[in-house]
Amino acid sequence: MAGALEGRADQHIQGEKAGHGGACTEEDAESLLQHALHQEVADLVAFLLLKYRTKETTTKAEMLTILNDYQDHFPVVFRRASECMQLVLGLDVKEVDPSNHSYVLVPTLGLTYDGMLSDGPSMPKPGLLVLLLGLILLEDDFIAPEEEVWGALSKVGVCAGREHCIYGEPRELLTKVWVQEGYVEYRQVPHSDPARYEFLWGPWAHAEASKWQVLEYLLRATGWDPRSFPSLCAEAVSDEEEGA
Image 1 (cartoon, rainbow, N blue to C red):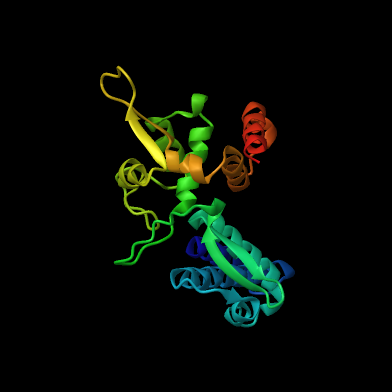
Image 2 (cartoon, rainbow, N blue to C red):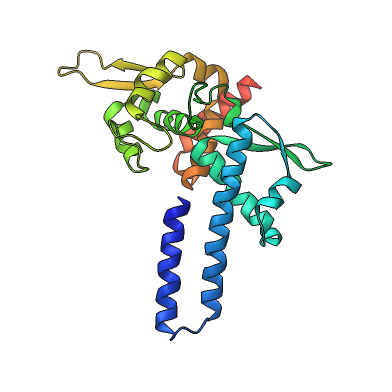
């Protein structure tokens, strides 16, 4: 993500300089700043991920040391890094002690699963799991045809049979790992010939997450208007109130 943004920023900056005979304009300065902030966000994300791997808390003072000459922009960098951690990796950055601004990272929605391997390098996977649970919510009767799931995930670069830099081989993750973990059910559509398959919430998903929590996450990730899903929102709120 950071690399793609930096590449586009470089092209924009070079193009602007060429168009103005090398003179630095106010727009050039803003582009340079945004380019630098993208890198600071990437560095802070890497730092926070390291803290999560080692199960350590961190503080604002520690994070400021990562920002080098851009400490004045900490609120913006911290917000963007936190959004990236939540929406891409599924990790929430939570303040645990306001007196010294200390933070801890935990799987989003209070999930107990993070997908990290103990015997080798791996990346957190709750972000993709919650996205899948959200896609299931959007389908009739909360049953998502497999072809619909892969069609939606392909739009964010997650394709069956293709290794992903964060999630590994996604087909095995969705149809085996998360089934064994109890987060999803993967079953054949009754009487389908040739066989077709569908996804449902598993028992562990029902135990750890609510429809409202997952819907809220999905709306935040996509920017969709909740008014586009009135019946689903109403049902999610009703379930939340019943569970309260």
